[in-house]
Image (cartoon, rainbow, N blue to C red; front, side):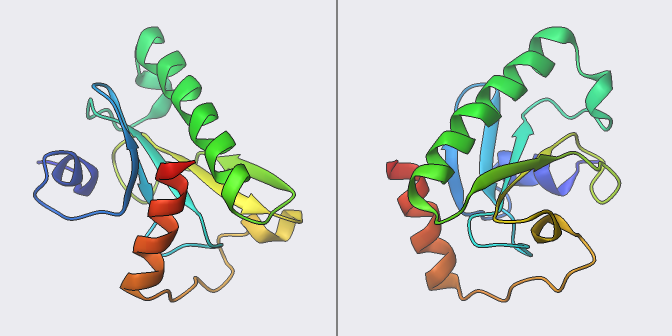
Length: 129
């Protein structure tokens, strides 16, 4: 069965894309902890990040680094935090979260409720960075 991320990759489900190449995609988290919270996903459907082959693993990290620089350029924050949890969707992915302090990355915090317009605007400024 395809993961929700595979459906986004296939274009079956819409997403606020910020970057994409042949192997990876980055899009806004629809339940963000902070404005500019991005998910970075390999296009190959592998559940556990450490089960990715070395080429996809290092490629994913390099792609995430490029996206982190773009986010930092356009979202007011001190750093871009990175986390991999891997339990919520059975498809390897990285969370990139603009932060000012550690508690900004606490997944127990209430999620932001952003309008579709706000999400589209955020995706656009990151894409243009």
